[in-house]
Image (tube, rainbow, N blue to C red; front, side, top):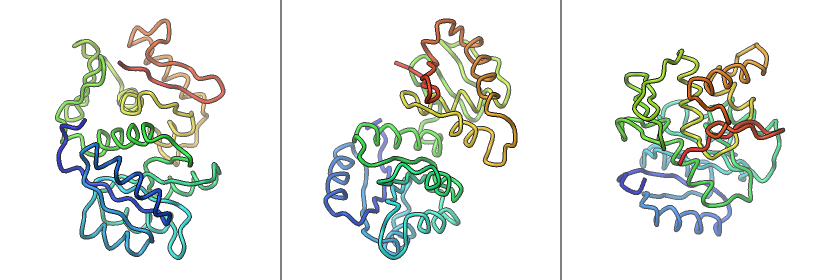
Length: 227
């Protein structure tokens, strides 16, 4: 991923030591980074800096991360990762409803944050890559095709979106709720069991009889494992 040049990340957190740590790490990865400690500064920087990714702390004095997310999502094509010290379902739902693309609970590892940043880049800015190759999968979003070992898979539109979402987020555990939100949409009124049906279909088409590519994480969801 370090071959990508010019990827800009905006960090917003009211704790200076967190900003310093993340800024140094992301700069070492080759990203352009700017920081802000409050919401108003973050919005101003978004307009000037035009980041690809905004990493927003939820709990900030004055304008909180939710409001910043809502405002920048109105006009900017920026992927938003929200950070919180609380693992509250209501907070996650609120952030995702306002347009956030991902959610992380403090404390988190820098490696996991990197994985989520790369996932958001692949998802939001596929033209930076052309075709995306992840392990044995080759994804061409322009043709809406996914190949496994150079064999084009026969996928329905929903299967395509589901496999793409899981591949982009490979290595991360994805809950059924998260999958429904991102693939079927927030207004989906059906049952969570539909995820199981589509996972079963993908496993068949991937010839994943032993569930080595798409693993079931009991009580948590699913994880795609790609080399």
